[in-house]
Length: 610
Image (cartoon, rainbow, N blue to C red; front, side):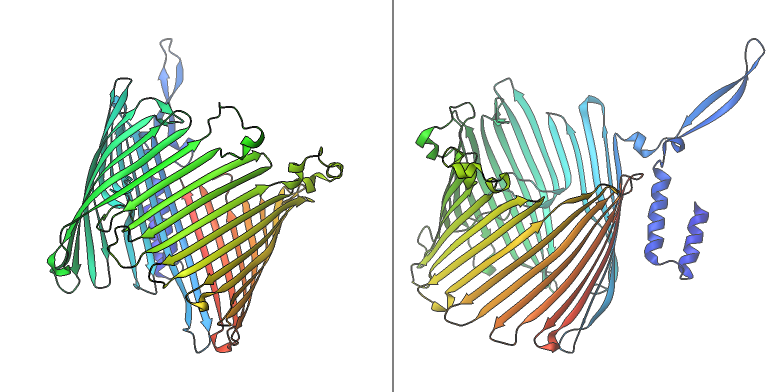
């Protein structure tokens, strides 16, 4: 092995091999040294001559087994990925000329896991990333992009460290961080079970003039029923607590600029009642403070979230007659967040109140519709002089009209071909109204969207039409009319002689955007031809895209032509190997020739999982 590496190193010095090939050979050589390549190489059989008691000489085979990592761990997997990306832009004097630059990226991921005694299981995952950036940093960078460890005893305790996303609750902790997370679970007989949670994490981000360091500490306790309803506990109650501290340091000055502290206490609950009803929610209280430099003092806030859903039980009697107008599913939610509510780890919109309700209806298998209403307003405690209110109403309809009418209502429907009877229609309507108490906003937006689906001759056809109306009683310049319409056709086809599957497609779409009073308008035509293919170990796709834009006022028109080609190879003999090659060429022709440019992109990705 050392002789091979020396030969490769000499070839690199003489310029016969690029550096990426040298790194690739080095990684593969290291993997081959620790992983078995095939079954015959994992064992060595040697035959020794032995003398039997009767004096005869017999051959005694002895098998020597190697101790590889795959045999030591219950789960051991190595993934290597190499990505070479080349990008270049060529333009006239008014655009920056960017010659071809090549980016290298290599990833090495290792997963190892083993089950020990007493039902204890551990697993470690890590990914090492090497990248070459010839544009920004002009240097090579090697670091771990992810490192995760897990140790657990089934149905008892669990510990996780490294990259975390602890979704404790919406308001307390719902962010990505690095640190440690643990849980302990115990059964309280057949009635309920209790679980304790704990998280210690931190995040660090570099900014242009400062660096932000955030430390977090969180915990909680749950009490859940042992009885399951639709795969979840019948009832659940819990408590969450999180504390976060931010420290913003200047790059030039070692002193701290801003220190922020925030703590959130919340109660979470869920109840699944008889009749298909479910009630979930969270009530949270926060306290936060910052240093005197930002004129912040200690403040407290509240947040409430309640969600009620109902799903018609399967065992109940189906609707009949006019009762089919009733919904079979319903969801209603209410959320209110006070102005002083502060959470550094959760997700909450400050000073906001939201109501929403949604229903779903089904007449039969050929007719369905849905309704929804959303009201959103800020300044819920009237601490500001302006309140913004937004109300959105939507309605959706799905139907097969000829199947819905049925043959018994009309004799001519029975004579229609099945392809016409299976035509599907979809219609959506949305009405949004925005208003402000200071009369700065009074806007109404109406959306009408229609779709038709038709299948015949082995092809799928889809027709779309959208019409949008925007009226503004305050600023007439915002009044707008938008139209979108187009067609999409695709037809899968199989060439049985060569076992070749083809997927040709065609798409044409027109978008007309017009502002009534300013006179500004845009007409964009999009044409797309493409074909995908799948043959044995190869999968490929070719796509040709044309964008033709006509704008008013004149002088801003453009025509773009883009060709994209990609090819993927997955050999049968090596199931974990995959190689993908992608090439694209973009030709942009502007009405002002000085702004025209051309762009090329080439990418080669290799992935191998041992």
